[in-house]
Image (tube, rainbow, N blue to C red):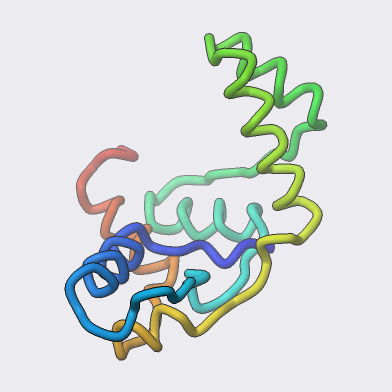
Length: 124
């Protein structure tokens, strides 16, 4: 599972950390409010887009080959492969309250984000 974090939350925390007192020397681990599998995230995006979206997990070698076929540099394909291996192993599954602690509100959930993006027509 992955606690998908809204980029707007990341930006808001960065602004707070850079412009408000009390953040010097602190480290924040930002997350969304709940951990979802990639299949659950795809289903959420599909609901918002109004069409089926399916997540299909690839073996690491197949994922790397797909990235290379799309023109990604080898170093980038290797880095992305290593990152997703950590995700698959659950190393980024921790849900934290750092967004709430910094911003004074709960972290945004994936569902409203998906609806907001779908409303732009980008997934039409």
